[in-house]
Amino acid sequence: MKIGFIGLGNVGAKLAGSLARNGVDLMVHDLSKEAARPLHDAGATWGESPASMAAVCDAVITCLPSPAASAAVLEGAHGLLETLGPGKIWLEMSTTDTAEVTRLGALVAARGAAAADCPVSGGCHRAATGNIAIFAGCERTVFERALPILTVMGRRILHTGPLGSASVLKVVTNYLATAHLIACAEALTVSKAAGMDLGVAYEAIRISSGNSFVHETESQVILNGSRDISFTMDLVKKDIGLFQAVADRAGVPLDLNPRIIEIFDDGIARFGPREFSPNIIRRLEEATGLSILSPGFPSEIADDEPEEAGYEVSARSG
Image (cartoon, rainbow, N blue to C red):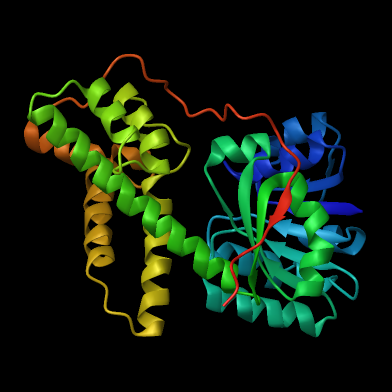
């Protein structure tokens, strides 16, 4: 099976790297041809346009920064829709709006091809090792066709239901991660202000009921000072905005997420949209005059688990 991959950013390059590393016949494309160089060195070929890729690939993956970017790749000049046809699959791995992926999926289906939204969760460090989780929203028959591809890029693969369902759950999980990040920033700052050793505070949280995936990962690079998780404030703002849109369409009056949006709007105004998202703690550092740093923590998050063959995760029914 020949796979096309469009979008070689922080996450996309790592997902495509897993495909190349495992011997998949891979064609890649990005706005920056330089971004494809490591994959070309690993055996991938270059696709001149989305349309040319869809013409020769069995499945084409998009992993792009916004719903608008995905729409352009499908509907624009030399876009995927020009050549997608029966027997082909479009796998949307971007974090996107459920209404938009459903709209584009209908256009794909009208050309006889299949569509699935397949966002990932677990951080760039797990995308790099092939151990990231992947949600897949599509018909069951499409999921079974896509599963061999998804298990190369990820470890735990969950079929979430129809097209668009995976995108809902992705923004739900990103909302939770953002809420945890803000809570960790506040917890660490209060610990420092109360005279606690931050290394001890980190460990106390880690072994307690207050622990979270975000604490185990992002709190480490906060305390190191690098604040580098290869994810920026503008991307957080996009994700929590998508979560708010889901809530608004469903008629759910939220209390916390609107405040989180305000916090990140303020962070972007102060530090810039491309600032690493864990540096949201700088708002508290500046307000208190404290430095939330501690020796012994890494500058980057690494996945210390060996790459493992992917598999489908079964959800509880009912």
